[in-house]
Image (cartoon, rainbow over all chains, first blue to last red; front, side):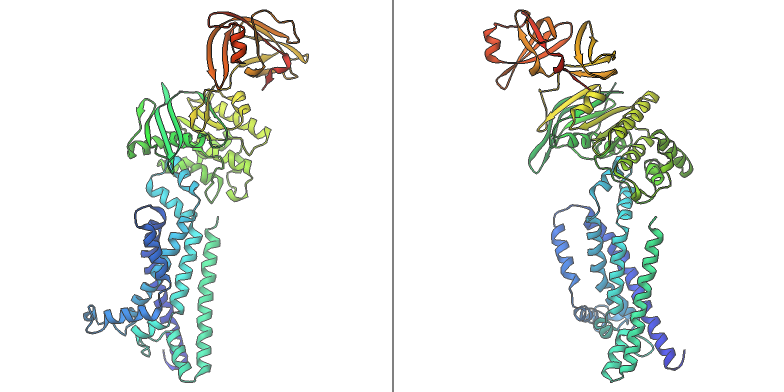
Length: 217
Length: 333
């Protein structure tokens, strides 16, 4: 793609790609983890949930810094050469989204009516089917967690800037591009990019709502 | 064979004893009513019999086999089904709900659908099949939940307050359907109720619970009769005896004579009591300062009198006594 229009499209596509991959990875890990925390009772569970809720409020720049130190050339994972790549942004955003996906899933499972489990069991369902039934009854709350996680990574700027480096054509996302445009006084571009970001967020939200409507039989 | 045999069963919640049952045997095909006020331990017992909760101590045997390990409990849950007081229907269609237990048992999809539809038909709600569960009324939910439980053809069905939210017609329909099911195949039914009337009307056996324990104050003097009808004052045969009862009902019914309404005397009483029966005292038990005296007059009648009266009349086991009660004291269910 060439020209400023092409560059903007490239930035939007990268933003979406990074946010989607990060959300999928975070949810693949976080939903089962949250299910486990919301479903089982074990010693230290409350402490874990409290820590998780603290992690929800982790400043993104702190996560950015941690991932930066990990991926820096002299860091423990420096050999991977991932710093200032879009994959590095994905890693940072997975770390950011994981507590959200986990905590909201745990809350969703905990909020399921206790009769669901009993009913499934008494109808002869095994452990797996019972768990699946509980998750099915909680599916809208779980989906809400996915949307929140996606919203968080799509709008995130601090960590993306630190580990991605805002490299043109490589790691420039909508949020980092807006930051740059604003600092350069190019408010027109900043507002345009901002509108694209809003449009993307809205589109995904609508798609998920449609999915909900479809599954809601 | 007994469907359930319970021994020394104990359940606690937060250190408080919710249930302590020395023994209980529920024979195959029985209709056992577990009665008692709210908090008596009825739901606790049902959940233990349904094997969804684990007791603190004690044993439950299902069809002669003790159920203890997790695997045994899992297997037992495929033979026993429970319908909660406020049943939960999963999101989706009524048919999907009724087929759930069959899917859990690995029944192929099409066969499960057919059998679920049959179960709905037995509850006379076949037309509900395609409905969204969220569009159902409380009474409809109840019937769908019973259909869902019967679809898996359990050996025992446990019902927690099955008619609490239903009107009279719905209650009748539910019990009719259950009776039909029992005539179709062997099925043991245990239902909890805080209303004695349900038990009187429908159960053939009764367990009274009070504060988690089997209560010695079981409802007594219950008799199944066939009311001839015709006049309000009816002459009813109870075993070898004939009683006078005031009711406008006709056909099968249950008579209940409250023990405190039965007057005991050593001589026949000349009073307004229309029923005077002579018999022999077979049992005497003291209960909270009162005496429960059982008189065998062809049928066993329990009378509740004060200790003072008991002693003043010189009553004793083996002695003769007259039991008198008014026709209007007889309750008809």
